[in-house]
Image (cartoon, rainbow, N blue to C red; front, side, top):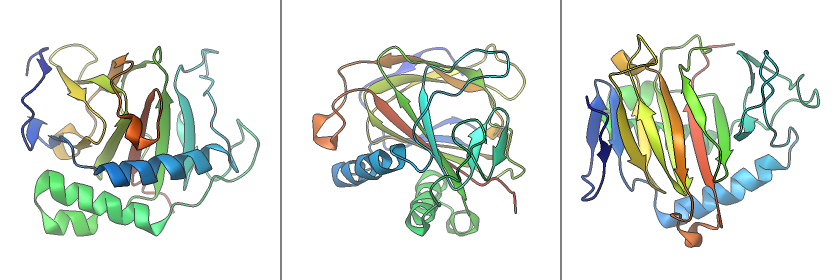
Length: 222
């Protein structure tokens, strides 16, 4: 892997690392509009979109809303004790079906797709200045893949390795409608968003500015 940015022409599918697959343009414009609409509904509550306060006192630059389970550093809970004490919106069946379709598209494995049973989604909104430092998604008890959907402004998505926050990593340009799935040997790889590219989104999605990132996960919790 290198530190170079993948740019046009955009292939149908790229294996960035073992188990980590980028599928450009996977979401139709109509589906993106539908997701923007429902994300706005979730952002209004019952647990509204918010900036997460970290244990050391820092505040994340992205704004987050959850469905199914509430995520707070560094655990999942049934109620949002760090926001308003209410349970988040339930995880809808149709979103699980979308996740299974995403796994099938990324891996070409119908059996793996059928086994995929996500039960939570973290929706992050990035304004033009928001970033996400390199981190591992390791609060889940399940090793099932993470499904990531991008809508709105493009970003630089830095996908690394499971051992260290440093190199080797690959910078991938994620564009509105793109799918990224990481599981298997790459399930616990460090990853982050060092930069959003303002003004690169598609207004027809209904998102006038910024970037929505919807990640589906199987928590492995009862």
